Length: 263
Image (cartoon, rainbow, N blue to C red):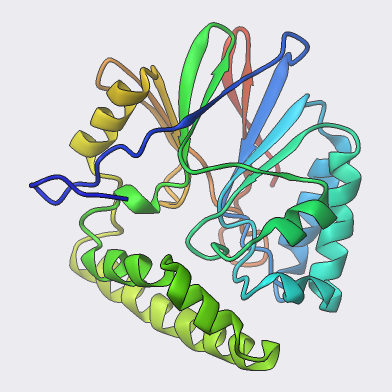
């Protein structure tokens, strides 16, 4: 991703995915943060995937709390998750975008899960409108520490060196990075509140994509709001294992959007 003279990321272009006429109902979820220590959240996802009436499901990042390489898919919990995804994908198309937690999800994972990798960004054309789909982390411009980290770990050379380590070593490093990330988020929340996507940059991206709608996750601030000349839909994170349970699906149909509470 390149940046303009103001330091804002320039729109990198986006693949356009056109929904077939048979799609009457499209679901969006993100920030599930699957982890073996969150059994109620994992169970809720399984119930949702086995019961949804959607014609397609889009996961817009952070399906997993951490992903350190596709050899991780043989671990017991992750193997169970793959079976769950594969069963869901046999009934309807399943699209998965990587997020800031699981950016190392690769083609082997997608193949085993029956999923289609979804580039970030992607434009989805459906019901006579165009929606720009992103995870959202790349536009949280106020979170400069994270963006420096992101620029480092998205480099092919860094990923190649990281994946060369044994799985056990990578898992230990992921735990350390997760602990550091939690400390950073807590400090940031105290100082300024959690970062949101940059308003001007996000609108510029929507205009460049000729999209009336923006759908993203990452910020854990579920909302639907007027955004420039269009509308922004922010997806919910999922957590049914702690004090304030939350889990939402954003559903898009010909007559508009609705939110389904799974708590």
